[in-house]
Image (cartoon, rainbow, N blue to C red; front, side, top):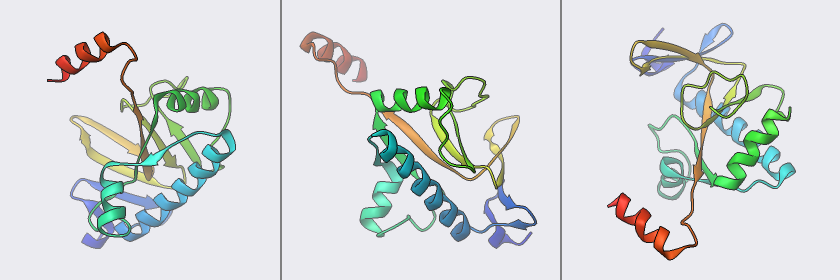
Length: 162
């Protein structure tokens, strides 16, 4: 494979018969986002873009040129509702699946949700030392936790952060 086909030294994305370059991966990630957005609209789930995705949208009017994923955040209540819906048999789309530690029967290796494109295989050897993980192109979804209503609990929590 030529260097244009790999995302990083230890990562390669393939679809049947071909390796994908970063621009092709980004197209698939936007497809995942579109499918996820339709799912969230159907189920009235709130989410926002976040982290590098938000920075790229503001600074670059799209992806950060060298970034290779989409990051979403959602209120924790919507996050847990998303997991409940998936556990109840709801699907994102025909070729997108969710992976999360809270999903029954899922062997998720991250402490947050990912939505994968099942038509792709992403071979990512550097993710977990000593563990080769084969997945598809993905977007990340992170829960956002709010502060407690009790002011004493807020102070206790903030002291822990500091």
